[in-house]
Image (cartoon, rainbow over all chains, first blue to last red; front, top):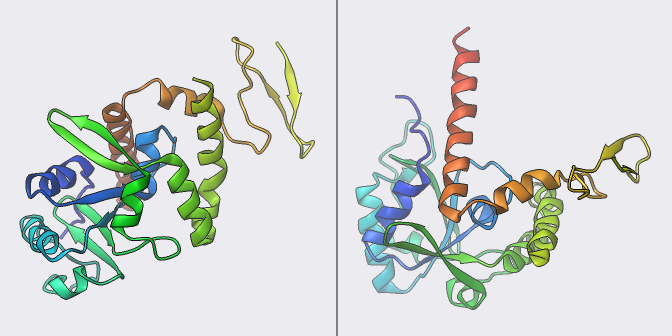
Length: 164
Length: 65
């Protein structure tokens, strides 16, 4: 079976329709702020409160989400997985989706929420997105090579935005 | 047109007609950033979507040769 083509908007619409509380981080967050970067997955930090995990589970069911393990489509995230601090690396019918319990130095949804902006990406579709400053901080905290690689672009983007 | 020497000394860059530098000192293409900033967030998402689809088409075309 061919891999689904990523459709970020369709995933975000589904999460929104199910009233899931989440924050966009990572590459898509960088692009929404104006970074000329490419990414193949959508990273979000979700609220791990029980009600939100229930809504998220329903959204994942609609998205046919399963772990990104070839040939193991039956492996789906359980509510206990979604309530954990860990990262759930999923494939959906609209492409890859990474659900992150925490990012950086253990920051969760509630902590990140203070460092977000609301961005409109479609008719009646507003999403919470990490601020550019917060995204840079997270990538600095993570310290992984792939995250450090994006930092020069993000820092220059911050400079350019401050001029306008 | 003004030219700026980059720190590594092996590459010169031209500034844009507006006299804005086209590259940062650490080599980031500032013209792409300015172009992306001229778009709305929804348009930026479309650019990403199209870029990914384009890359995957190229990959598939290459794999089928």
